[in-house]
Length: 284
Length: 284
Image (cartoon, rainbow over all chains, first blue to last red; front, side, top):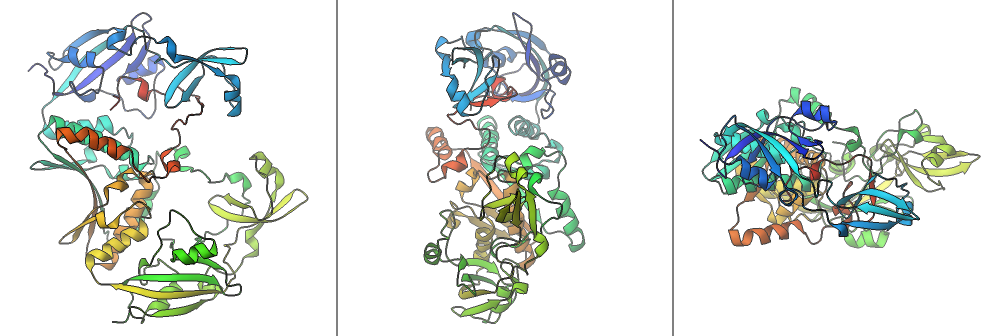
């Protein structure tokens, strides 16, 4: 069955700048390594999307319609259909003193962020720093090679696909995620490890909202609920279990170190015993 | 009915240093303001605890047993029953250069934190800084005045009490929290505003764990689940609703600005970001 808008599929793709052949994005670990794009935390392999679901460039969605499982295609993307034309107004002169104020030492090629926009320093000249806030792929012709790795038919797999797409948590084991369907309601119990995510709850909420939105817009459900369950353990097992849950391997250290946590430098060898500040909170 | 261990109660209390009369903790907003302890984000009023549940000093739990609703009591707490005796080993000499290394300018009375322990600088002498890591109430006789504001009988109110105790989110409206009881399982749907908490998901998980543990250890349930629900809105209302949810009134600004979120100031990024720049993520 050829792909239609609204279908759930898994795609492999690699995007290149047409003129230079430079790879800028790929679902393949091998290609990523070769192109110097490899990121440890990223999960490689075909990505689950909804065709027409705005997960990739519209040009890719459109090109995929009509393909079948196993098909591949080369897609040419013009700047208009890609990341837009370059806009001269997005090249800005920033006084050097703005950088100095923040203890920064600008150099050409350095990436800077201002109000959520990422720019790249082009030149530095007489106390003025020229920053280009255009998307680095703006004005470029792109070429995507795409393979339809799978057309997802199974309802539960469709939902799991959306979880994987929107909830980019590298430790998530999708096979440990439980999906329960009850009429117009989908209940999702994610892999327990996700409970220890260091991201803010607000970020998690946005990811959950995106998952839910894709589910109710593209499948026949109206409610999506995420359930975190806590269960009484046998007295013997309880303490052990808890300790194991609290120390998680693979959690990045820099995320555990919070603001205000001092470095070890100030401390002497003798570790002072913790005492809670107020009697309100117990040690647990 | 006089209070027994395991009872859920609401207590008002004020803790003072016996020798000086200095108030160091209170559930009363008025007293807090008077003592200069007032904290904007804190919710004042009687706090819900389980007697013997380790939420307050054991000495307070013990003294409350046998009291009745409306009763009040003055409780004397010795250092042994309070925050311990002062320990000379917890007074440490730290070379001044350790502070300088971190761009800190120590002065007597300054609070410093090392490996999660808070200390107070006592003196500075010949390049050596004397830091006292004893709890500031160590070695002190304390006096708590306690009023049993309520003995909680209602099962749902007991659960809500534990939510309020462990989930200290100032925006939480406990009346918007739904509790559903089904056999041995308690389902909790918190006030929607909590979905936008800026705390890490891991912190939320620990709070939920503490709530669950108090519920299954003190009430007759074995499972506690927290449900976050996302519901399809009418097409018209949908976009509006979403926007409203994302901009929340009353959320403190400093909580919205997360690490890595660019401010209007210019921030350098050593490594180029992939996420927003690849076509993998839509703007949403």
